[in-house]
Image (cartoon, rainbow, N blue to C red; front, side, top):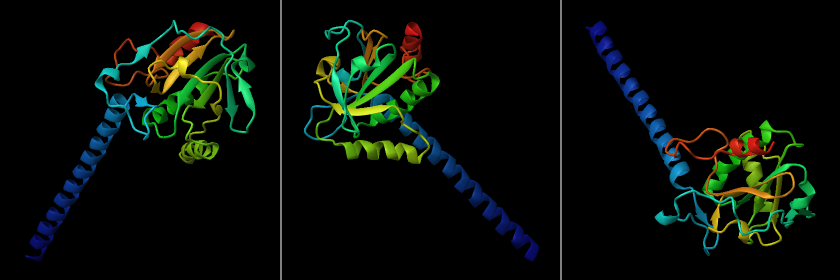
Length: 222
């Protein structure tokens, strides 16, 4: 009887453990699905609202590509680096330059940082430079540095150039949405722009198969 009871208790314990394991697996799957949905559906975020929030307007949830911006080609805009120095687009002539317009509270911008990291790590500084310019005037240098530090805690070094808007960059983001990326060729000519999340090479599930990737555009210039 003792043996039988022991077996029953062992069987019950085993069943309980299996239930817990299955529950944990389900939780992980659910969380993964939620993250994927956020990454796909939360592509745009308004930069003009009084309160930081994502733009849930369905009409704006379509990625836009613009190779014919009204901004003059080679426009030599200025921005303020985190060390207080004033930099210009022309300082990076001879390199492909990605201009990333973002804000710390923008969730899609956080996903974009991970794909910009892939681009930065796959090309030399003689070939490619990234300028991540914060366009929210309510944010300061400390907030940006804290943002970068949070990524560093998880092993992601965002070691390219960060700064704050100096000259108005509004003409480069006609949709008013972030993240917005612009790519300039080695002579400073605007080559490509895209409002919304831009994948580096792997197109996320749910995105159109013909989604333009950053590596495609970079390789066209290098």
